[in-house]
Length: 143
Image (cartoon, rainbow, N blue to C red; front, side, top):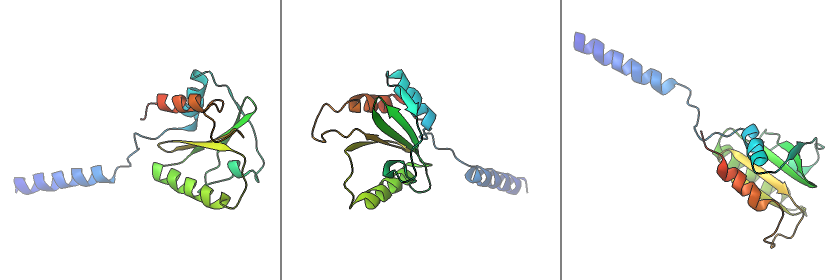
């Protein structure tokens, strides 16, 4: 009988462990991204953008943080998961497929999607801040 109680207890422990809410160690919050920009000498100034701004529109229910970096715009989307980020990016591409957009560069890390709206030449290696943005994202420790 003792063996049966041990097995039941063990099963209960496994069941409760499986039911726990698991927070992904790969989750990054917008504030961490902003701090990483600041550490890399990029001063973001929070701004408000009109709802009709395609870069600032909701993707999969997520409204981005809107910032100005010098004269350029930066939009930071904080999705719940990396899969949601991918879905959000797909929705953006579908929404803008027939639009003539100003030049921008997307950046991704885990659940974060960033649009850096630079308006520069897409084939140029010297778009201001692209390298620094990538370095800021690379500096983020996941978890």
